[in-house]
Structure formats: structure tokens, C-alpha cells
Length: 251
Image 1: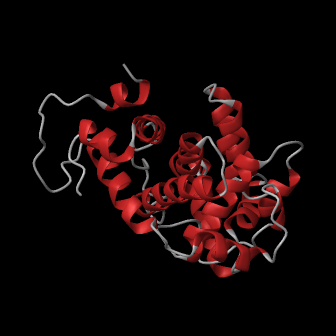
Image 2: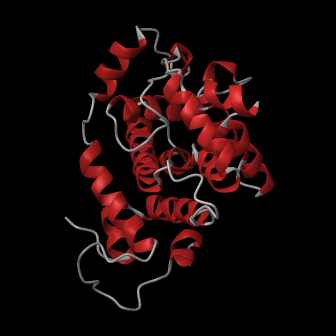
């Protein structure tokens, strides 16, 4: 069923999901401009967006399967987890182009390439932005620790969910998660939910690669297109549909 208006999205996806998607789109759209000198042309924003949506959807589905009650929070964290890459590509295009070059030439995971070139990672940058913008603490932690949930001091369910979702989407090669090198799956992400099996086998048993992901992505992607001003290749049902800001903030 194609989502064509915000009201329709609420029916198909649920209000909490639409609210969190609206918030996430609003944040990401702050960094939707192009690079002034073209140095960051290697960074594909469309593929970045596809990966972000996929991670949000996967995180929400995993939240249900692992009985994590805050599925809307997981959805928003999944969409925003890589926002640091977007910031680096827009405000440090020359340096980030070097990161991408090192990543490819040395077959490194993007975080390692960032550390080598910049001394910081996209997770560090994204966490800093989340703090500056007063995003909820749990979102900031998920952004900061989505590659290293085992280093979280205290409850780590949300960073662990995002770590698992990111792994799933990168394994399935949905969008651009930061190069072709698949980072290792941290067993701590499953231990956060009391699961002590071999990580990849356990994740496949729990989730089943691709199980429901493509369908949910289509729904979320259609709404995100509406929120960003697109027409989803079809007419809208209501010319006076609520704006993105309304969807993000609620009544």
C-alpha cells in the first residue's frame, strides 16, 4: 500500500513512527546542501539516505523481536546513527574525500579510516552534534556507541539495537553504510538482550535476513519522500497535508 500523505502514513506506520521519522528527516535535512567546491562528490547522499532509512526500519523490527519497548526511539536512532558522516561530508569535504580514498585503497572500515585521517570518527562527530542540539541522552549515546556497544557503561540496549541494525543493513548492502568492508558484529550487542549464542547465527535466527525489511522500507521511504517535499511519483490526496514540522512535533 503506497503512502501518499502524512495522514496516510500515520494510518500505515503509526503516529510514533511518523513522529520519529519526521524528527529524523528534519535533522538530516539541516545538512542537505551540496559541497561548495565539489570535493565531496564521492559521498552519495541518496545512498546514505537509503542506508539511514533501512537502519531505522531494521532497528524498529529488531526492537519488536527483542522486546525492546521503545520502538519509536529505536527507529529515530537508526535513522540518525550516521549523521556524523553527513556533517563531515558537508563541512570538511576535502578531508572526508581523503577518508573515503584511504578507506578504499587500504580496505579499511570507515571508522578506522576516519581515525587515521582525522583523529576522530563519524560517531564522535554525530554524538557532539546530538549534544549541541539537546537531543535525548539515549539518542546521543546510540549515535556515539553504535559501533562499540560493548564499551557502554551501563544499560546498552539502544546502542546494541543500532549496532545490530547497521550490521544487517550493511550485510544486505542497502544504501551506503560506509564502504564495502563489513565491520565485525560485537557479541556484546546480543548479550545486552541476554543472548549468548554465536552472534551472526543468533541474529539470523532472530531476524532472518531481509524478513519484512524491504516492505517496511518502502513504507518509511515513501513518507520520507513526502516529508522532504517529493511527490512519490504520484498525486497527493490532500493539498493541505501537515508539514514535516507538524509531523515531527505533533499537534
